[in-house]
Image (cartoon, rainbow, N blue to C red; front, side):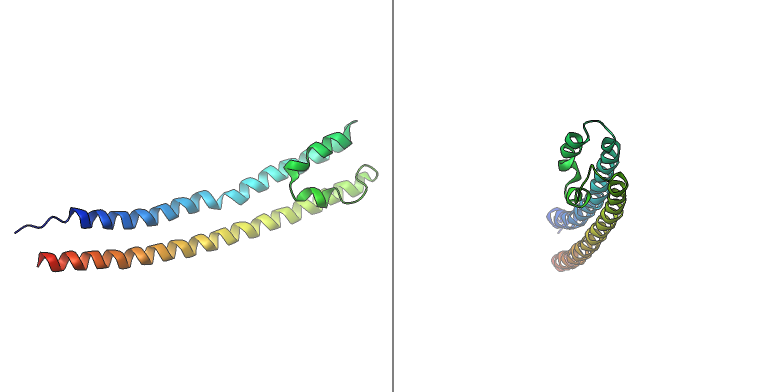
Length: 139
């Protein structure tokens, strides 16, 4: 007598599909810190350019949202008074910002490896259970 194994096959496909979804989330999640760093780097470059403009104070204040937490590092102290000091603060903040985003990217990578390993192991155990049940029913 033939048995219908399509539902068990569906479960096994879903198991491997879950592992694939974790991998897809990793592909998306791993690039987020880099994208944030590029936007912040562009804002720091714009701040250096706006520093020399006639309406520098207004332009720099408009950049505050794009600079996010870098604004408190860049705008610490008299901004428009000391040109060399402002450029040095921007350079120091750029170094700090890239280091922070590098650390964030590393942390995301570690969490994604752990998640992928857990889903893969769980999928393997689940698949083995399904196949053992199907094997017993077919015998």
